[in-house]
Length: 169
Image (cartoon, rainbow, N blue to C red; front, side, top):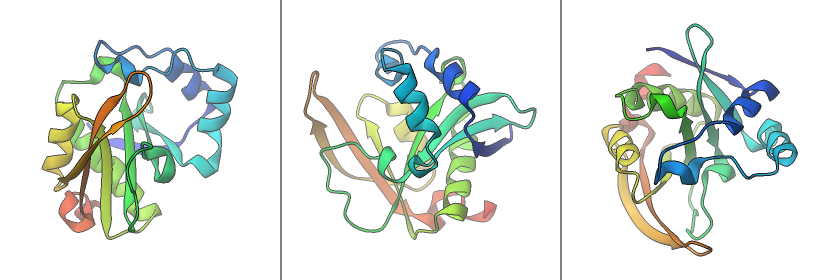
């Protein structure tokens, strides 16, 4: 499947608000958030959120770059492109992750040229960790986000050229 990355539209965000993930992935549900403020935040160009679509234009996910791809509790010093992703729930776990992440990283590195790519992933989300590992990222540390409930994260990073996305640039 081929993917394109483009700016989010309001209707995209409203669809994403209805996505529901099976536990434990339900931490990624946008439900329960204030719809108006969530829509406004995700549509703010300064937040660097984008839609991921198939060649037919179907919304299959979203991505973000920079500060919104970070989780409070880690020292994000050093120049790296922080990448966050979200795939439509009915498509997860079906082998689409590698191409999805390749398209996201290729787009991100064209738009925000960095030598390093970094992703912060919930420790339980081994599927996502495996995809980023296949793109050349390696674990550089772990931390637990405080709050209710506390949640453990792994931070992965790698050279942009090793990410598997470089040929797409």
